[in-house]
Image 1 (cartoon, rainbow, N blue to C red):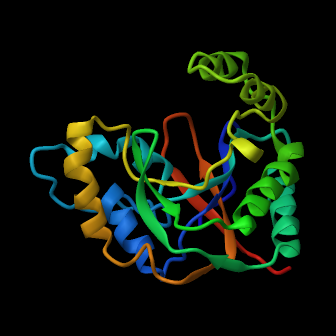
Image 2: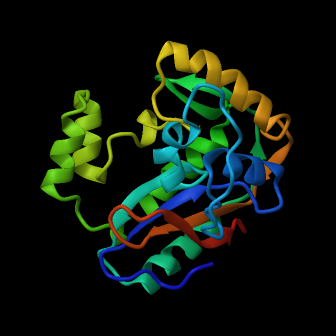
Length: 231
């Protein structure tokens, strides 16, 4: 764990595999960085492609699935941590369906293999519970997101919650690559599926949420706290 973030840092609530889960080891190695320790990790070879480039954005965020998207604090770190702890205290653990590598709008990501209402409830609760801790998004950030082309509903979510892909627009995913061309996907999909092996599909429970922090713009995210679900 790391110390309290400095002013200007960003926080996020993510799901991340537990440190003793094989998915943590294999997924972190695929991305080339351990978000628990910050250590760089050797990545597997990917013939004909630059795996470091293909995973650069995902590596910066760390192996995770977004619950409450990154935000800047409008309150102290202690207040944000207390809000996250209170949330974790009222949420109950639940079983996560087996995960599998899938194509998500051109990105490769780990996704659940069957519907899981508990995931949606968890993400919705995280978005709402920490919103009082969130400083409003800067106009430049809002404009940048709108340039990607949003539906009216997504734009309304962006204006209210600072992010367009929450609530019914949210999809559980653990990002593994940038957006790929069809030729790249033909190489990377079997490679990452083989590298991760049976780790994604192993039985697991969601027993904690993790506070990730980004110390400064462009810095890599690190796990600051893992908060056990105690509801």
